[in-house]
Amino acid sequence: MTCGKYLAIPAGAVGLSLILLPMSLQAQLMLSFAVLGIMFIGMTRPDNSTFRVITLVFAGIIALRYGFWRTTETLPDITEPLNFIPGFLLYLAEMYCLAMLAISFFMVIDPIKRKTPDMGAAADLPTVDVFIPSYNEDAELLAVTLAAAKSMAYPKDKLNIYLLDDGGTDAKRNHKNPHVSVAAIRRHEQLKALCAAMGVHYHARKQNDHAKAGNLNEGLKVSKGELVVVFDADHAPVRDFLRDGQLL
Image (cartoon, rainbow, N blue to C red):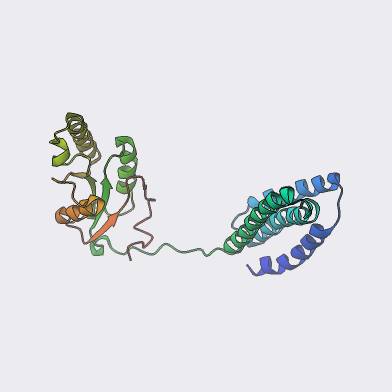
């Protein structure tokens, strides 16, 4: 990053002059295309700190030149409040976006590269139970989440996946309303078959007490893992979730 830091100083000086320099529309278009070209070249080497600094500096040039033009050329006359008030509010919103863009530049200009920790010997790893609580989500969505959880990089004999189905409980399957009962029975059988096919555990409790918290507490009664991870029904974990030390 040292070379990139030194390069940022002259690049910033050039950029500042370009921001304040009066230009015709044709010159502005040429500058924009030239800056975009430099940015695209820099984007081809995202791991190179020098190219990354160049890309962000010239992206800042485009953004700040727009802000300069917006400030000096486009604000309505203050003597016309019907035009000035909405125009100024829109201007403030755009300046806020530019400020957020500047903050994002500081965040990505020198990212920290974290090394994946060594998991150690498989025999020394704790057993992990993954809970996926569900209520009325579709089987297709749950299948994606279950597949992602099952595919996490971890010893398979120490990883157990549980689908905690609160939409197919005994109370719902025996509900006095036949529409609720039939839907719950159908869901129960469908998700039970899905879990059997995917090699994960299906669990439905008797009552729907205390909503999601009660569902998780019921899951803890059948869990035997040393650690428990909870994913929402629409949360597909990345493969390295456990390997990256998320549980440590």
